[in-house]
Length: 141
Image (cartoon, rainbow, N blue to C red):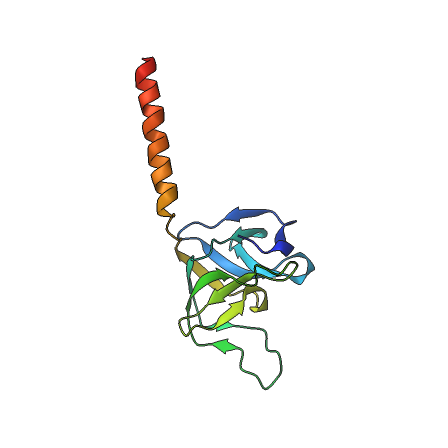
């Protein structure tokens, strides 16, 4: 998924092994882009696991605040889904801290480690559909 504010930006879904970069898109919204194409937002599904090249950094809200998150792995989440016109894309870190993606400093490198598993129901429906199509093809021949 990509945040509502990235709807006007060209996008594509993430794949395992993608090398991503935190990036500021139109209107200042933060998100991920492919390292080789900063004009395309890379959209993640909730549950996608990421590994950062270095400790993750947020924009410092105040000069005395710490902006370093002492972890290099995170899981993509969506928060505040019941609230329209607010940022939903976030990262959850191993200590449970959830940080909005748009608050991260740009130019941080991350790799997609794993995409979320497909729900069992979707896999079962696909198998049934394939079996039915196969049976129809056999019946026609």
